[in-house]
Amino acid sequence: MLNSLFSSKPVQRKFSIQSALHIVLDGALLGILMTVAIMSSVALHSQYLWTKSFTKLETTRDLNRRILESTSILESYLLKNQKLARHLVSTKAEDLLYVDRPKPEETKKLFDMTFKSKLLERISSFPIKSGY
Image 1 (cartoon, rainbow, N blue to C red):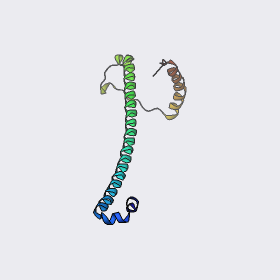
Image 2: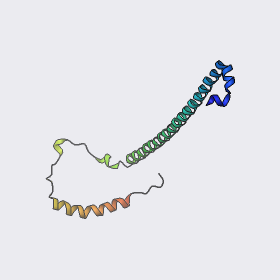
Image 3: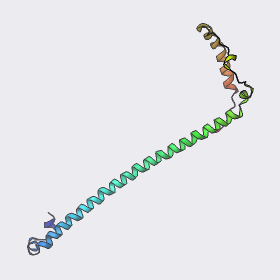
Image 4: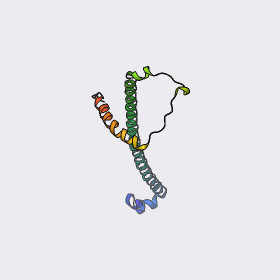
């Protein structure tokens, strides 16, 4: 088909080597163009995948940084409010008292009465911090 487009039969008969060379070069050029097109699409697709992965990596880094900041804020808050630890006394195994486990019905009554009221008191006594 390429033969008939670019040259006529008498020219092909007269210059057979040159026409064969043209056919080979035309095929090679088409092959190179197809290879360039395929490699370009592969390169663009891999660049898209890399960009997508890098975006996920940046998001992960940002979340990790936020976790570290939150941890440090929480640690500093706990270290500032460490009043209880100063009043504790170190103990030994001989100083421990072992108490029998209470019966389930006693625990339920005590828990229902005291926990609800103390929980509300604790929640309402927390200071409210604005911002992150």
